[in-house]
Image (cartoon, rainbow, N blue to C red; front, side):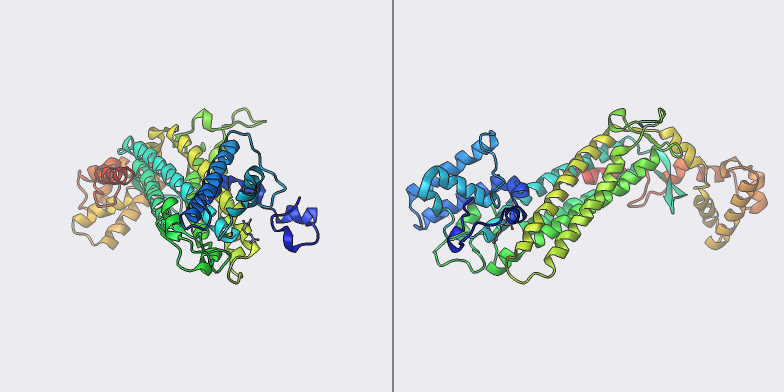
Length: 457
Ligand code: ARG
């Protein structure tokens, strides 16, 4: 097939080289933004008198036709084409003849591709923010139903202190709120319009970059043409933000997997979000959560791919940069499907409150509260800590819990214990009394929920 750049060459490109060089198999997803970019560019060319009104109208109308034809399935991509930009320009020229050849006036694929990726990622960042808000909303609802669901809080995966399921769930909501914030920040730097930078040094035509910027709804134009065509920082930032989201989803998945094991049984996943085993009839596996955890790996890999690809490149555009797309598109697609599936999965899970309570009743998670009881009676914390430690050892050796000890037994360790110790080590009381900003008391968690609900409006 004759290339758009055929003039300088005596031979056709080798077929294998053509395949190796081609990006249309993965950059065709940018067909719409590519067309919208070309429409804005053509309108600007006419406004500036670089092409005439009639030519511009012809180009714009046909570009719209091409867009419709692709969307209606009447035009399929030619995978012989070098990339989506060449494909659309060639299609335009096939359809309207010589006028089509004018669309690329005062433009290079280098600024064109930079524009397209930015437009494509802007849409996707908005979508990711929407999906994250949706997830946060589900987390708020789960928490609202579990303000008083006592469970053990863990450190080192050892039962540590009593918290509520709501508090645990809202910890994840905080992570996803930070993720939204990071995406909004990334959006700012993606929302800068590079077209008009040309191959590297703009153009001698009297173009109006601000006009294109307005037409395409960008915040501002890029400030240096070399930087504009060689910058992929926004891809790296987004790849990082996505890797972070996936890392958060992966940690959450790990807990979901543990919680639905027989060892924990804190939750039960809906059948629609679990799978069976091909050999073991009793099995119900948390495959969705495991896949999310697994897929986090590839998004971290994608971040590395782009960073490594960029780190040695001289200014300005180098073909290496074509490698940005598969990585960032894969990250975007992966996080989108993970967010959607994960959100539906937890929205439909059953919280086994009773089992959490049973677990909370074992493991002496109110030992700190017992020590604090003595501190409030005037005993220095270190001494109170030691007395409580001895009490715990006594319980272990006699197969008892702090709740089950008699006041007599308490008093044999310290005379200051009175009947009200049982009130102070009651698990729900232990949680309710941690009524400190950011704490697990139902009142404080309610504040968190209200705050996050407001942020995701
Ligand atoms: N397909 C290329 C890319 O995705 C287009 C950019 C321009 N190519 C070029 N040889 N100057 O990066």
